[in-house]
Amino acid sequence: MVFQENKTIHLHYITGTYLFLFIFLIMIFKILLIAAVALGLALAIKAKDKRSLTITTGLALGVLLVFTPISYLKTSGITIYTIFAFTAFIYGLIKKNFEPNERVVISIITLPVFVYWLFALFHFPGLNILKYLMFFPVAGFIIAAFKNKNLKSELGFLLIFAVDAITLIVH
Image (cartoon, rainbow, N blue to C red; front, side, top):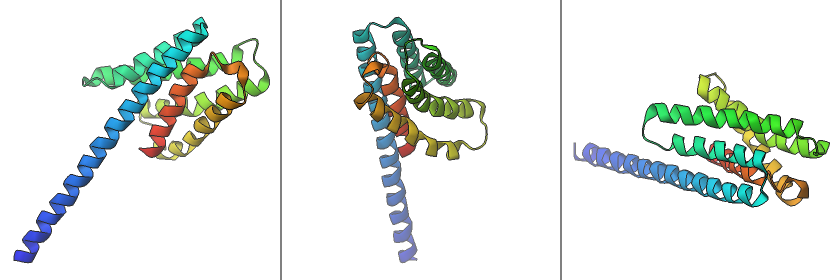
């Protein structure tokens, strides 16, 4: 009997430790996303492009609404984020002074994030499989940040997408 009681106590200790680590990781993800939103807004304001600033502001609003404790505001935040992710995808396709490789980079970054959150919003099956596509936005952001000098005004919302993809990979 004594051995089983100690085993139960030990199991509760391990469960509590994992719960603490899980909550700690969620807080780190929130801090990373808020930092990405702040830096993304700063980059968009610095670039002085109204369209990319609008997209970045919409994404920021969606992220901030997701962090509220009210459930319908969380759903509204995911909806706003998904709408502006789709807007960023369309923006990358129709902006006039983009070269084809810049259009591809923006599409690689925005499309997987948009599809993931669309699936999450409507509870479509296959959400876990879509997490594997989140490596493309991270790689696309690295390409955009270091190789494409023409994407300076878009780096704000691309940063938000890249950090969101990293949190989805790890989470």
